[in-house]
Length: 85
Image (cartoon, rainbow, N blue to C red; front, side, top):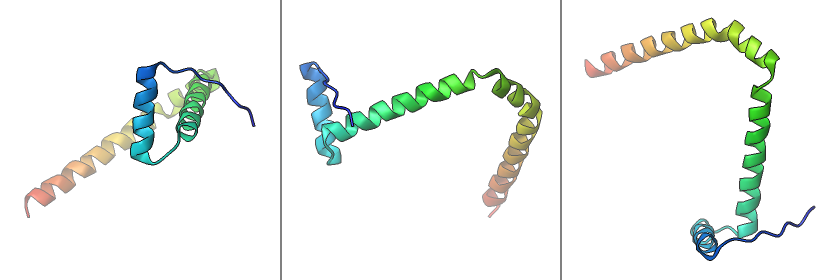
């Protein structure tokens, strides 16, 4: 496990402390979670730039759009049925 020193300005530190108190968590836990989310987001961005993934999306785009439109049509029918009650 690695230890990381982190310097926060007073305003940010006070805001972080307030969040931690409200959530009942300590700073280390919150900052570790934020760094993990940042790293996961960056990995996802990198994965989404994969040309093979872009090609796969192009192949599935029409089917995906059709399923979304079908789902919306069913949802609208359900709302109409509820309104008639």
